[in-house]
Image 1: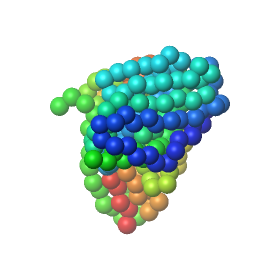
Image 2: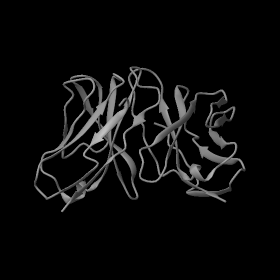
Image 3: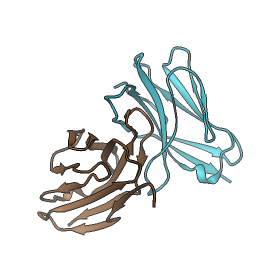
Length: 112
Length: 113
């Protein structure tokens, strides 16, 4: 699986957009980019995933560069409840491979 | 209630004892997973299962045993608990393709004395 690199921590003011970067320079053609987050003491929560097109859902937007070597998760209006560890994960698609490999993630702290 | 549940939520045991952590999901998802989370290591996959009676090792399977006799249940057994198995354990499930999102349970905090 391709490895990912994320900054260990980031801060964001409440109400502002939080932009979380992820580098995955060794990503291969069939690998998807997934984002999960983990709020303190809870199980990880799925946010969004994509292959090469930008994606948006009710929680966030995912911007993947054209060469697919990096991506950015955007929380458009961060709230205090968005304070969490955010994990960027790259994994193959298809039916035979369901494993997620979690790295250290980015600790996002949203300030009032 | 619908969803994925784990029991017990907290467990304290002694070295050498057998411990079973339970995981139950109500979605009939084919895939189920067990992870452990330790400070400095993030989440690491212990075992996973693609369907009933089909299981496979993950990254850190030593010291653990799993079974999957029913689709909805995926118990994890520590046959002889060791202090190094003190951790938070998360169970997860995903739909039949295995490529979609995984839904995680609330976790079991296990302490081995």
